[in-house]
Image (cartoon, rainbow, N blue to C red; front, side, top):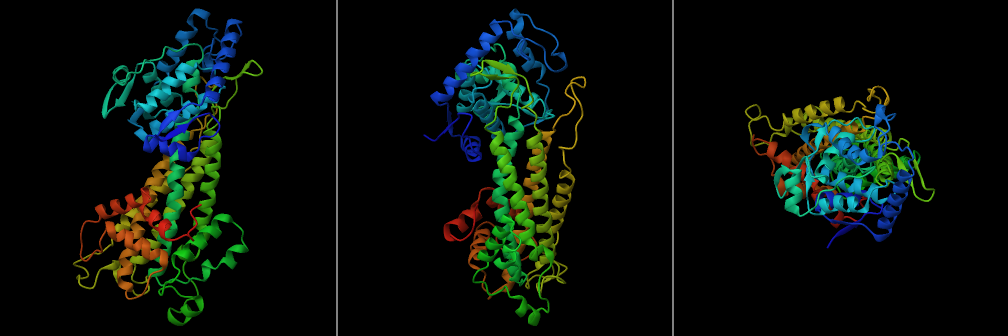
Length: 519
């Protein structure tokens, strides 16, 4: 059995992918269970001693000055979950829901939330038995964390709301009954421990970063194949250039492109290009690919570091510190770190799409593509009667333009909530959702470049592709045949995009090329 252990300290982005997409089983180590029990015992003692603790025996937000009598503090927690279940729009997809449940459980397992162990175990049981709450995608401002979406998650934990179970959407109560799980009756602090935190935005962020790391490598593959089919100049990828500007991502991108085209008879040095095409170097979309894609690599690496910290952080409020036997109220629920990182990720991904679309345009323009036919129309097809790949670029342009709009940062926006008591919010979930949409758009943009570059390669025979680009070309051809005459191309775009999403091209390269840098 494949298992992921949650202890609040060691969860990785790769673990999240395993649970969210591959349904690995989640377990709680004994050490984490003991921490949870200790934290709960301290909280209960503080409540019994009549300490006033935010969200435990007070109201929430602007109502925190209202003290709740002891006989009503359990009801307070259920009321919190119900009143904050205000999300709207289409439901989050299942993998995001699963990732969010995992992250919420991992935070609770850290042992600072004061929750009962049985409540945590019930949430993990739901995850393992695939009881997936229906969580509307919109309604979070990212502080106090993801209140609305997490509340919809917890509604099912208490036997309310809606859930998907065994392919059907039903009431949360029915889903829990069918799965053989007893709903939880929330006690002191448990509601605020469950719905207060950054787990939805962080779940989206973790999955998006995982896919973005895959996409940047595929973008390097696409660049290399385009470089070759445009008879590009290799000087710009010489390691000496990148050593004197020591950005790590830039050097990796340059090395990967150079490795991909090794052995090619199509590319040329600047000295040779002066004799053939009368140009010493290529346009920026080719020549500056290491600088552009390398900067995106470095940005994605930064985002990974932020998310790796966040997924093992205590982000609810208040927090119980068992060793000191104290409960402190603060602001770890605030999503600003994730918000900034996801806006940066969205910008980096937009940049990857922007430069890819420019290379696609160059492949299709007979004035710029070094002797290839207009729109890569094959010789046997009548030009004019056939449009070739002309309008595939239109789709890339549409997606690129949409990305530019989506890349506007969410982290700089804030609208106060809770009667101006919560007066600066992060919009982190908006930033994460935008980054996810930009990622999906950019996968299509890169798929379009790969299709065009593969089509261009048909015209360069008997020239020889490089060691890596030949692998990429052959893999593409398993899913999309050359366009010999006009035909609908949407299916081919979708198929190649799936090869990107499912790592098909990269896995082929990884299996056959040890020199390609996958970090």
